[in-house]
Image (cartoon, rainbow over all chains, first blue to last red; front, side, top):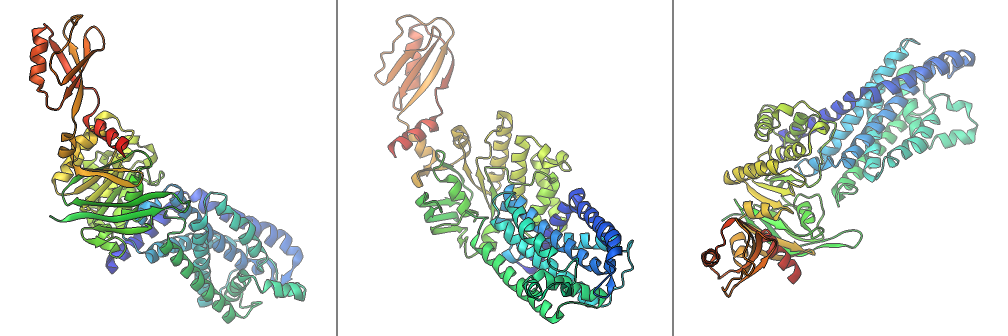
Length: 257
Length: 306
């Protein structure tokens, strides 16, 4: 396949993915925005006023980066897992598999689709946050880089989940029992300094903790982690997950008999 | 003559241990209209799955226009269009989007893609439905949409897995005309079907697959020539004589009711002689038809032999 053909095929997959989540915007874009707005109102505004400062910032300011990151993680993941599994379920994945699109283009198309939804919801949440607090980005390059890399990581993870999923239950188990606890324990609502030393070490094993804190560093200029270490973790995750996805596609796991 | 598809010693054992293909070999020439027949579970869809790379083969080789499907992925897939047995497009997308997406996967520029999309949607009578969601289409329209989608990159080889299953007679006939037209324009077609009349009407060559093996691979003409007898149903214009018999040695007559009878005629027996003798007994025939499809008789005989 020539490179311009690959580019058209890639564009086709991305357009199809964006069209899919835009068509069902009431299910994909609105609910996460409402949920996060409730977080702002309840935790940021009502409870936050009693908490006072966290990590040297007003509680509302402190949780905004974490909530933006949470929406990006959840939506990047759920877009890819639900879209790719729907393709499998309806067998429309066969349209792609009989065509000459290389595996890395298929993967890249779905990843960019996941990123598009994650970042779209992230943008809505950011806009909503501006009604509750002033948002000044201290380090735009780090902010943008970490959010892009994080959405790639969770789009790749969603893709692997979809490959192994055989039912709609299988695509909700990981988000419910793994992703949500890791996000909530990843320093979205609190600083790690509040935890006893043992739980600080345990939190260090949670990759989402590094992503949330690096994003917070980009916006507020303060972080519980070394951001170079965080970027290294993101790089390792992307490499391992991408290689796994390509290997699974090459083997035809879950998609070819 | 160029070989459109060459299958050599193709084997497939599924993960559960079921051996679907036991070393089938088959050549289909370019321009052919080839029927691949077999009972349910014989291995037809597995064979198509391997050709289209949806099923991973256990052994053997598949070449499309001289190129192996597993090493020349781009070239072979470009030459191949597949219409699967089951509906496999998104039920939530619009008709035009389904076709445009497919043509995009093949890397065709947008302008050409739009032209092709319109051309095939019009040819298959779906242009008026282009902005409707695919789930609102009738069963026949969904089948035609799958054909349009498979043709939109203009493959040299089209494989159709039971394309007329569940389609009404009128639509089936119009699909036959369409397939005949694209075949006469040079597209090689491989067809699997349960309608043996369809295979007899359309196909020049035939392969019969049973229990993962090819048990017959010949031309339709020579296969039908093997038929040693045919059974007809004849209707008379008036009440049949009570003692109606035929003296001809290679015929057998059995009354069905007062006006109809079943006639078995050996391949060597001239039908004219049968009519002469009926005429002598005062029997006038108003209509005559095959009791079963000729190919069906042979098909069942081959399966019994296997």
